[in-house]
Length: 441
Figure 1 (cartoon, rainbow, N blue to C red):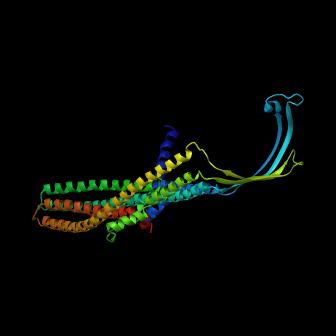
Figure 2: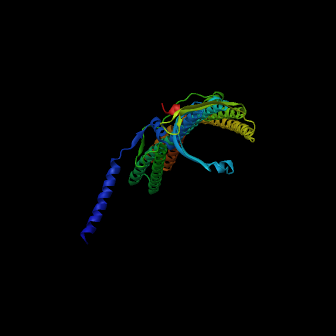
Figure 3: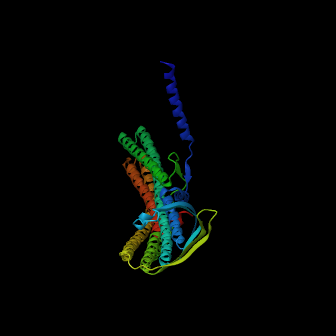
């Protein structure tokens, strides 16, 4: 074998070793739930796009405002002109040259224009302001939705972590029960069937632990995607699953609070106001418009021969026939108002349903947590008593494995109940338009 063939495996081994060391040295980013929400509101692509939409709407308002302000410009021109008189007049006149020129024209100066009376421009400026408010409300909608997604994913990660801890505890218990069965078989107190039964239970718990760890990893990957982190950056949770006591909510107060706070409703209200102004602007296009414009500068056949010249004028424009454009714009504005009205009704109905559902689920989840906690306590006592009976030789380990299964179900129910409670709490905060405020403190 040549020397090159020896170098290639060594280089590959060094590359793999370096990659392994880099992976070991990478420190996970530990985040609490509020920190994760704040990070998502800075880095999530949908939030960033919404921020750009707000900036764009502000520039559109500045454009609409500029139409009401005076416009001024500077210009310089130096032209040489030669005209064909025969083409201009339409026939040749004897004794008159066929063309005139060439002659030079120089002009330099300033021009301006300003609207004096144009209600349509004012209405469009007001409409653009309402559209900007609507865009800001839509941006808040995206922030609220992103917050709910991050909170839900973080809670899912906490649930997966709790499942892993519960599975590890059950594996330890199953291992202890298996060791106990082996020892009692050696002493002649139990049979090989008891040992086999304990071993089967141990393997089942190990399988559940593998599934739980896989679910935990995939949940963290989903959280990293929502936070728009570097693909090589790992995330670790700094919070633990806990029970947050919340006050009782009445349906009527919650629904009214949602109607006043939900950004979707505010956005539709802003769109409705903008459409009404557009309708008024379309109707006011039939009114006269007054414009002042003019220019001042130097004119002459050359720059040295130029003298000051100016022109100032006031223009009155009265639309007489627009080909049906004004009528069509009015009709379009009325149609838009009807569409927004239907959207407002649908949105309020959906928001009311979300609030009612969240309140009911929160109250139910609160009771579930209390029942699940009691069930876990009873299941642990049952496992302890079954182990004592099996140790004393009074019963086989069927009672033990049955108690194990009951404890496993009780642990799962406790974790699921606590997750549902925290998720219902987040759903209610989102339904009432308060989730960003609640989870960024």
